[in-house]
Amino acid sequence: MAEQNKRNLVKMLLLGLVTLGIYWLYWIYKVTQLSNHVKTLPERSPVAQLFLCMLVPFYDIYWYYQTSKRVDVMMASVGHPSDSGILTILLTFFTGPVFASLFLQDKINLVLGIKTGKPVDSNISGALALGIAAVFLIVGLIALATLDTVRTIKQNPEAFQQGYNFGSSLITGENPEEESNEIELDNEESVRQTKDGRWALMKGDKVEEDFTGVAENEKGLWYIVDGYVDFDFYGTVDSGDGTLYSIENGKVVSEEQTND
Image 1 (cartoon, rainbow, N blue to C red):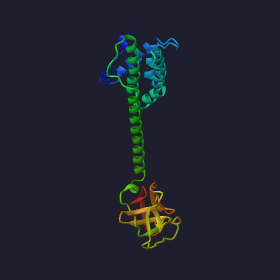
Image 2: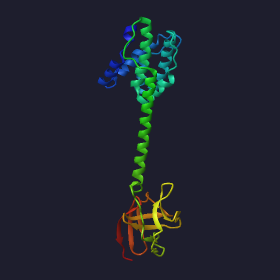
Image 3: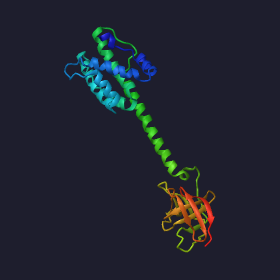
Image 4: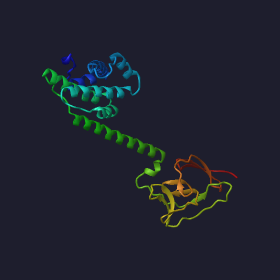
């Protein structure tokens, strides 16, 4: 029984890759059988545990945690106290079954090697397993941050164009019921990025919050609401002087002269 449950970790990894993960299900079945030798904890059905891991979402995390407790008991029985529950959960959550299985099998190999006097080569250490978990955690956080940045860019594409300065020259009122206002901006007034990262019509360092309208610069025409460029706006704006603007993501995409 001991020899059957000692496994070379490199071979395990290769088998997992070749079988597209099916090997890890076989491993769960066999390790559940082996862990039932820990008589201080309730016995588990290998078949039931296998199907639960296959069919119940996230049950495998629970299985790995419970199995790590049994492996810790086995470790203590050969004079190597261990507390691997938290590390096993981290490995399972961030790397899936692969590294968690290798980590637990490493401990099983140590126990069975001591009992039989025949250690198994190609084992990994707890420190290495923790390092692997840390790498996957960092990669996961970077991926999440990247996805969040991409989502923000899609929502406000113009705000992320490098070297983007508005420098508006013409503004007209947006309300068709109000009289059209045309204001020539002086050199101090322009649409630019504020300290908090938003784009706004500013004079000096002050946002012109009382202004709503359409502004023009070398990049085109832009829709401003209460002093800020409204990148979420989709629709049409009537200038009141016979010009109808079609706007997408805060940018004017077309103009149409209407007949009053």
